[in-house]
Every structure is written in structure tokens, then in C-alpha cells.
Length: 273
Length: 271
Ligand SMILES: Nc1ncnc2c1ncn2[C@@H]1O[C@H](COP(=O)(O)OP(=O)(O)OP(=O)(O)O)[C@@H](O)[C@H]1O
Ligand SMILES: [Mg+2]
Image (cartoon, rainbow over all chains, first blue to last red):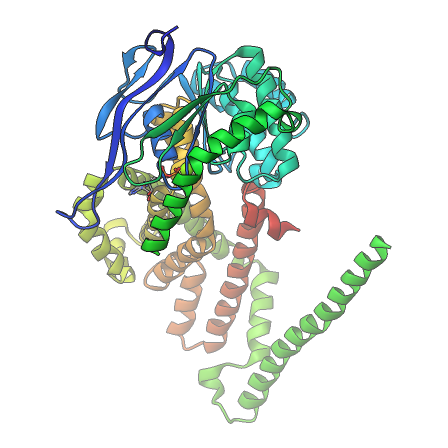
């Protein structure tokens, strides 16, 4: 199974350059010549130091940002415009504050022209699946951070996207809620095996969730610097698996590779600051 | 335990609030007393400053005889029409220009100019165009309300959260659906933040319009009284207008709470 044939989503030589502050000033090359691919049903994590361009890459994959060079391939076809096969769970809160939880979850169905009554029913079903039955009438500001993330997850999953793009979705949560959500995610994912691109800077999270991890170098001119298959058995419990010897061994290996990049990123930010 | 501390708190709050309320009433009574004393002792000429008791009597007369109601009704209708039409136009223009950079760049200097112009000066022109009836007052009110709403909606459209926008686009919204489900609700919250000012402006437009030439309305009453040097009626008219404005403001506050349940700030005020 070569990635080229099985890839649902592939980035091919992606480069992104932000324009310089003044006209004529040199631009800022955030990422350079990045190629990665996700197989069908694969859970891929992308790990890199802060500011290295992870969100930028995901925006490119979603079709929200046109790359300066390279191409995005979705099921082998070159992407132009938005990536209609992908669902995107954003790093920041992205719920519509003027719609309650149910209306937020059903939004995608309504946009697609599904009957309001049926959309309603399916939204309630999804709220139940993410553990929020009974909270449908609450507005986002009346929900906790963890609840909002669950609503956002239901909002994306209800459309049954082939590809799930997730940008540090659990970064703002406390450790307990976070592990709960990670387990929920794994359960939902294993039921329907979507392809996932999961972005994080938390290596432990990446190892406990993924099939494969791609490491990105520090900014600028970010590119992949390593790829690690994670051969931990499934189904996994994210809290328990962290205690297994194999996990610790993988963690040690990947961390050694990542450490250098984190230090580099830190040095750059020191110099700039 | 908890209920005890909660009732303590309300007791404290009530304890604080009652004196404040009393002080406010005393202040009002004091002002009236000072007014009464100064005019009846002849320090201020009653011919120019009115006599408070006569003023209050006049207000009482108006309401007991029912003479004021048709005038209040006219002023209310003008205010409501100016507010509704001005808001509608403001929202439409704000959405259009907010979403079309070309149009907004083209029209920018003219909008600034129109906004900077003291628009009360248009009243005589509107009187010529639309006559002395309701229409000319509504037109004046619209020019005042329009710009407030317009600028707020324009701002609201520009400041829609880019993440919410990207997210809704990823959920498959078409351009029209974006307008309906993102831009419009977001703009509405901005319209509401300026609701008090725009209702006030509609009222100003109605009264000033009446004052500058009309056949009915509270502004007309004041104009008429001024014509006969009946300063007591002028003050009575001002009192009625003030009370009316307060009532309008109260109604707006109620409407706001009802319509903005999703808004964290509005919801917090309710508590
Ligand atoms: N709109 C923009 N204009 C100019 N530069 C940008 C823009 N967006 C991002 N950048 C720059 O691109 C680089 C990568 O940003 P990005 O948000 O992709 O980082 P990230 O890896 O997601 O970081 P984090 O882990 O903190 O979320 C950063 O140096 C940032 O300053
Ligand atoms: Mg990011």
C-alpha cells in the first residue's frame, strides 16, 4: 500500500510565504516544500514547535488558504477552492454564538438542504453521542470550554466528512476533560474510520491517538523532519497506554528528534523578542 | 447557610438602594422647590422661567382633558416609523458596503460627508418636499437613524470573527447562507448595541421636525405655546417629552433583553 495510491489527502510540495511588512520587503517563508499524505482511515498526527506553521498547513489542506507553491490532492484530484470532503475542528472557538448548541450542530445539515425536522433529530442524536443530551437549548456562552469543544466536534461529525482536520482541539482543556475527550474521539473514530489529520504540540497526546506521527521543523522554512509509525495496539485508553513500555520507548525516540527543534524555535523567539 | 448569605446580600443591596432612590427623589423635589422659590420670590422673572405649579397643572390638564393624546400619538408614530425605516435602510446599506470593498471604497468620502453634515438643517427642505404632515418628520428622523445603524452594521460585518466565518464556510454554507446565518445575526447584535441611541435620534428627528413646522405633535404644542409667550406650556411640553423619552428607553431595554438571549452581556444584565 503506497501512500500515492491510497492517500485520501496529500500535500505535495506545499510552500507558504507571507508578504513582508513593507512592499518590496522580503516575505516570511512559513513553510517550504512540505509533502505529506493521509491514508484512508488513518489517524495522522502532525507535531511541531509553536509557530512552525501547523495551522497554516491545515488551512491549506482545508482549502481556506491558497499555498504559494505546491498542490493539495484530495483522493488524487487537485484541490481548488474549499475542500468539500473535509471537516475542520478549529483551534479557536468557532461556534456561532447566536445559535444554541442544537442549532450549531444541525447547521451543516440545514446548509445542505436537509428538512429542519430531520436535521433537528439528527442533531439531538449527535448531542447525545458527545454526551450533551439535554444541553441543546444552551447558547455557547452558557457552556463550559469542554462542552463547546464537544458541540464543535458534533457539528463537524454530523456531516460525516471523509477527512477530519483537527487543530489542537483539546489544547485549552484541563487534563481530565482532555483525556475523556481523547477517548471519546478514538471511540467515534474507530466506529467509522475517518481519515484524521490531528495537529498538536503535545507529543504524548499525539502518540496515544495516532497511527503515524510527522514531526515538523522549527520556523521559518518549516518542513517535515521525521516520520514515526505508532504500532501501539488498539483499542486504546489514552491514560493507560501512557504507562506501557512501548509508549515510553516511542516517546523517548520521538522526543529526542523533537527536542532539538523546540530548542531552535525557542532560540529564534528569544532573538526576535 | 447559602440561602442565609444570599438574603444577607439582597438585604445589603436593598439597604443601599433605598437611600439612593430617596436621594434621587429628594433631588428632584429640591430642584422643583428651588425653581418655585426663585420664581415666586421674583429672583427669576416668571415670565421667562415659568411657574412650576402652573406647569404641573398644565400637564395635568392635558392628560385629564385628553388633549395631549392625539399629539403624543403623532409623535410616537413618527418616531417608530423613522426608527423602523432608518434601521432597515441602515442594515441593508451596512451589509452591502461591508461586504463589497469596491463599493465602500467608492462611496467612503460621500458617506463621511453626509454623516458630518448637521442634518437637522434638512428639515426645511423635507418640509418643502413632503409637506407639513408626518412624512417630513419621518424623513428627518430617518437621516438621523440611518447613519448610526449604518456605521454599526458596517463595523459588525467587518468584525465578524474570521474563525466563525471559516468554520461556517467549511460546513458548506453558500454565500447567501453566510449572509443569513453569520453576517446578519452578527450585525444585529451591533444594531442592538446602538438601539438606545437610534431610538433617541428618531425621537429627536420627530420633535425637531414638528418644532420647525407642523400641525400636530408634542413639538407642535411647544411651538404654539411659544408663539403666544405661554412659557408655562413650553415647560409642560418639555416635561412630557422627557417622560416620553424615558418610557421609550425603557421599552427598548425590555426588547433588547428579549431578543438578545444569546448574548453574554445581555444575559448577564438580566441577572
Ligand atoms: N495571516 C498571516 N500573516 C502573516 N504571517 C502569518 C499569518 N498567519 C500566520 N503567520 C505566521 O506564520 C507562522 C506559522 O503560523 P501558524 O499559525 O501556522 O503556527 P502554528 O504552528 O499553528 O502555531 P501554534 O502551535 O502556536 O498554533 C507564524 O510565524 C506566524 O507568525
Ligand atoms: Mg496553530
